[in-house]
Image (cartoon, rainbow, N blue to C red; front, side, top):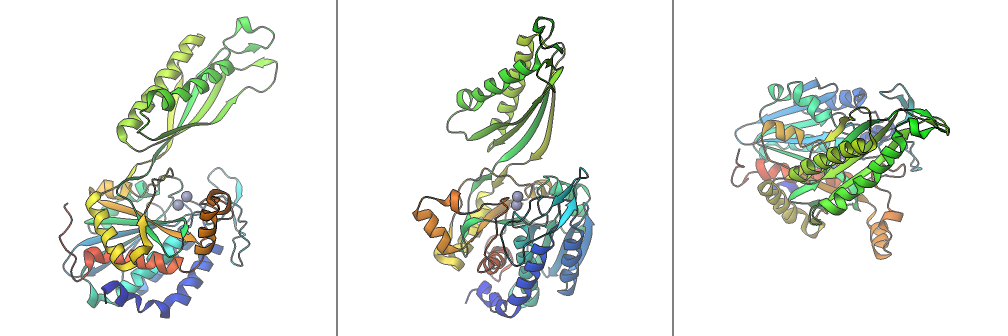
Length: 425
Ligand code: ZN
Ligand code: ZN
C-alpha cells in the first residue's frame, strides 16, 4: 500500500468532523483582509495537531510548521477569503452573512470561490500527516493566506516577513476547486492561470455647452475612439498563437445630455500568459491612448494607473511532473490534464519571493453525474455554476476527501519514504 493510502486509512474516522468544520466555515464566510474568525479556527486546530503556529502574518495570515526530521521542506497553501456575493445555492448551510467592505458598504458575503474547501482540505491533510509521522520525514509548512480575491494577500504575507517566520521551503504547492467531476484532480505544466492587470485611464478634454461643440474638446468622442481602437491590439497586433484578453469593462463620462464633460475615465482588464506579451500590450495601450488624445487635441496628457494586479501562474515542469506522477499512481484515471484557465491567482507571489519552484492543480467540485450529463448535452457553461456564481457549491463528498488526499499525495512526493531526487533550488 502506498503511504498516501496508509495515511488515508485514518480519514473515515475524522471525516464527520471535517464536514462539520466545512459547513460551519461555509456558513461564516469573511471578506478579504477580514478573515479573523477563520484564522483563529485554523491556528487553534494547527496547534492542537502539534504544529508551531505563526499568526497575524500580513494581516490574518497563519502558518503552521511541523518539523519531522531530515528532508525537504514543503509549503502547502490554502486561501481563506470569501466574496461579496449573495448566496443562492439553497443549501441547508448557505450563508446569510453580511459585512462592511473596504469601501464602507454593507454587502452579502459568500464562499463563492470554494476557499472554504481549500481551508478544510489543508487543515485535515495537516492533521493526517501529523498523526502518521513515522510515514514521512522533512518539514511541512501549512500556509493559510488571506485576501486572494483582492490580489494582495500573498504579497502581504511575504512583505510582512513570512520567510523569517517559517523555514525556507524547497517547493510550494496549492490547489483550487473548480467545475469538473468531484473525485478528480488535474495538473498542467507551464502557464496555467493568466496574469491580470486592471488599468484606469483618465483622458482630458475641455468641457462646455452641448450646443457649442466647436468651443470644446469632447472627451466622450475621444474615449469612444479609444475603446474601438483598443480592440485592434489583440486582433491585429498580437500573434494568434499568443492568447490574450483585453476588455474595457467601464467607461464613465458626463452627467447630462447637453453638457460636454471635462474628462472621461476608462477601466480596462488585461489577461495574458507570457511576460513579453503583457509588456507589448501595455505599451500598445499607452501608444493608442496617447495618439488618440493627440488626435483629439486634448489639452492635457492622459493618466494611467495599474491596479488589482495578479501575477502569471506558470507551473514548473519538474515539480508538476513529480506531482502528476504521484497523482497518476494514486488516483489512476481520476488524474487528468487541466485546461488553460483565464482566471488569475496571487499564490505564485509566495514561491516567486522565495525563488522556489511551484505547481498549482485543480480538484473537481461538481456532482459527477451532473457533470457528465452537462458534457453530453454540450451545456456545461449553462448548467454548471462556476466559481464566483451565487449558485457555486461544491458537492461535499468526494470533494473534501479528494482535496485532502491530493495535498497528502503531493506533499509525500517530497516527504515520503522514497521521495526520489530533491528539487533544484
Ligand atoms: Zn475567486
Ligand atoms: Zn479562488
